[in-house]
Length: 169
Image (cartoon, rainbow, N blue to C red; front, side):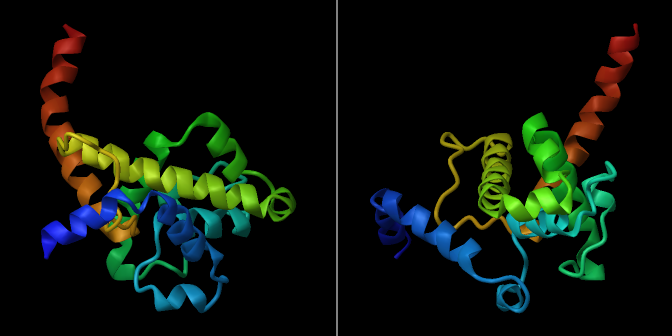
C-alpha cells in the first residue's frame, strides 16, 4: 500500500494548493484545536497577529496558548530553525505592527506557509534525502519539526566544538 501512496503523490501537484488552502482556510480559534498539533505556519500567524514580535523578541522566547508546556522544547527548536531559515524580508514582515498585519492577512498566510515549507525542505536536505522536496504526508507540525531540528542542532554542536577551535588557530 506504501507504493500506491507514493505513486498517488506524483500527480497531486495541483492538489497541494488545495491542501494548503484548506489548512490555512480554516478560521482561527477552535478550528485549530481540531488539528492536534499546530503547524509552523499556525504559530507564525498567531505570533504576527498578536504583535508579540514587534519588539524584536526571539521566536523561541514567545509564549503561545497553542503550545502545551510539555511541548515547549520542540517549540523552541522549531522556532530556532525558523530563525535560521527566514529571509530578512520575511522576518521584517512578521515583526510588523498588528495594524499592518491585519491589513495583509493574505500575505501573512503565504509567508507563513513558505517559511513552514522551507523548514521541511531544509530538514529533508540535512537528513540526506536525494529530493528534499517535502512529500504530501510530511506535515510541518512544530513538534515533528522541532524534534527533527534538535537532532541537527545536537550534531552540529558536537561537530561545531571541534571546528570552532580550528577557526581560532
